[in-house]
Image 1 (spheres, one colour):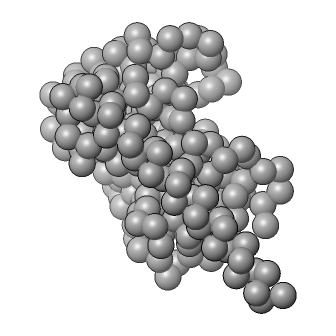
Image 2 (tube, rainbow, N blue to C red; image 1 turned 180 degrees about the vertical axis):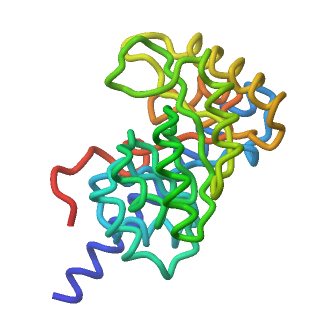
Length: 240
């Protein structure tokens, strides 16, 4: 049985390594086209529905940034990997009653989009003695189910985060509209990010782009891309 497990582990590691090489090549090509340095880009491996064993394999392959979008899955996975030197990113929509749990492991929260959530995260961070970086999720379409603050509301929300105990304002995040060319939306995000950075110079993160549109995001200034399917494969129904 141990030999079977070893063989499966080796097979999966080779698969992840090949995918990682492909994604890194895409990032390098996109950066070259945009006149940017690929070292400016942080690739976040979004491991939702995949097991902690995949996180460990990715860490062995040099991946240091891991993203999750559901606290119910992320919390135990992060707990199983506390011995690894990883930066954990919470990238999904976040309910205020989950703030305490998320702050316990997340180094960066990408989906801050309302004042009540800032209050909840601040209280949780102070209680836990942690200082997570908060990114403001900016809505790039009119679908409220996808979360995000209106661009006009970003300055006030940023000021609230910057003034909150236990939180650090890190920048902005967005998800491209469904079924549309993502480039115009990412250009809008870049403008919002520039205005934010003018008021808060340390808030330099632009989290945009996923497996299908990372090139367009990089062309519009993304500093962080969130890659799931292109790296880990099709989503699994059950987490082991």
